[in-house]
Amino acid sequence: FYAPLYRRFLDRVSRVIVTSAAYARTSPWLAPHGAKCRVVPLGIDAHAFAPGPAGEAAQTDLLFAGKLRYYKGLDDLLLALQQLDGVRLTVVGDGKMRRRLEALAAAPALAGRVRFLGEVPDAALPLLYRSAKVFVLPANCRAEAFGTVLLEAMASGLPCITTELGTGTSWVVRDGVSGRVVPPRDPGALARAVRELLGDPAKCRRMGDAGRARVLETFTTDRMAAGVEAVYREVLESGMCGE
View 1 (cartoon, rainbow, N blue to C red):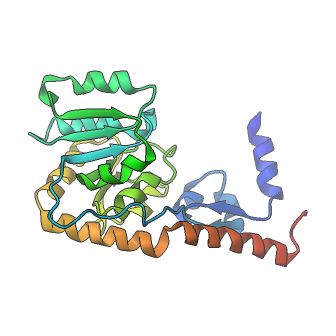
View 2: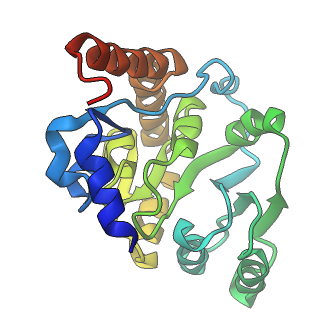
């Protein structure tokens, strides 16, 4: 019932703002309207999220932050953690899946290695990012369209591990440059990527530096606002408004 209305809406609009070219290209709704799409990436306050002092000891190996929803793939990360002796994970966020995930984390193989912090104040997030060695967003479907938490982690100087979904996740994180991109729903691939990064601190530092540089270059709030303004100016100056 909704599909015809949505198609008609997309036929009538002048421009569609998307957060990544990959999402527009792989979306069955947006692909037919590629000429209308304009990419304006999401942005963050890169001054609020910054690397900690050199030599600061990490309090956890892995960090996950986000709503505890089905598409975040945290269950895959917990399965991967069972293959990684001694690796510790901190989970920031809450949601309907928390009880199920806590039950998975209670497995004997994970005893004492997973902390669920629940929701935390925004002001506490920068310190939590700085307290980790690697950030992981193991999303498992296109409902994860971009991954703003990846920007926060990259701005904090963390290498990131995420998944290839055909959305923005694998554009935000450049595989082999600012982190690793692995197939979704693959705990074994997650485990190998974690093992690779935690086993090479120098690589982690290089990837963390590259990630922060990418945020400063592409993903700031100023650049996002300028991009949205440019799209509106394009429409107004072309006389398309109201067609």
